[in-house]
Image (cartoon, rainbow over all chains, first blue to last red; front, side, top):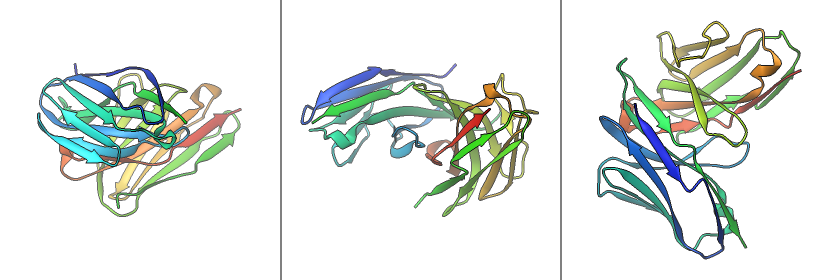
Length: 113
Length: 117
């Protein structure tokens, strides 16, 4: 069974204090690992797709990396507006022939000014 | 690009009423759409996957007669909660994925908060 585990569950940072969020996964036939940001009362917003080990993607203060077993979302010098829940998901081929997403429980990030 | 519109954003109705939620991909063709349910401070729970022109595939434990899903076109999927009861109150979110399958991201609507009195 495909599994995605995110840690920590919650993270509090001071503005400017860099840190990393972790997403470890076990899946057969990985087609992509995805990072999303979710604000309260909203749907998730797509951030990055990573396809193969060693790949890195950057967007403003965020950088996502991928190994064969886990992905990290690095946040450099975060600002209060980076506060959100960050979700990690994988997509793999199901027995029925469709690519079904599996989400982690998310990391709730709060950045204090 | 990749905008998904979900309506309504908020519904309050009496027990026994049926409620329809629409999910539209505005600027791309969504060969696959997903419907999720999310409880407070919890992650997304996949309810069903629908491919355009096909019957939806429901996850284990989701009643297909309770949650009717239609995906009649490449830009529209609907979720109808039939004879809704208070325990159906939740935050429902749809997502759409372009052709290309597993290496394509999902794009989400902003969700529908359903409250059944």
